[in-house]
Length: 135
Image 1 (tube, rainbow, N blue to C red):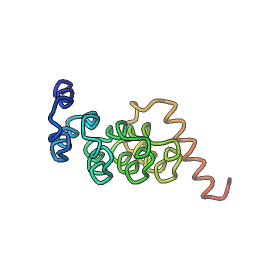
Image 2: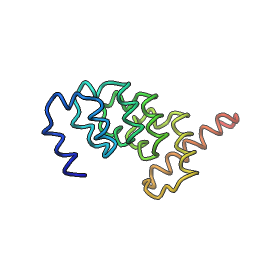
Image 3: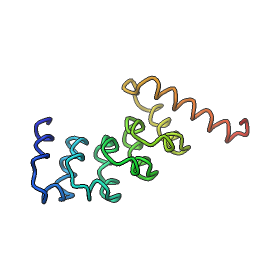
């Protein structure tokens, strides 16, 4: 896996621009996105498909796209791990926090760093209290 992902850096420019080829590589490892053409790395439609295969893709997109609500929501729907790579602004977004909380309560979350869990819980409670008029 590691070798095939790293081999992508030597792929032709034509292959690095081939969305289907890169999506296939992303299915094997989200890290493959770093070798895709800059056009694909900035293409929102492509990235929305890519995060469905591997939410790790969010780690390799631009800061601007880490701040794209639609991409981040799709990524955290797939895996809580993607939360770490969302912009600070979106890490505090009510829908993002609620999505992550829902996944955390349904799935094992031992792989999530404790400080991230605590931040999510704090934001969730803050959002819940605000909704209930306690804030």
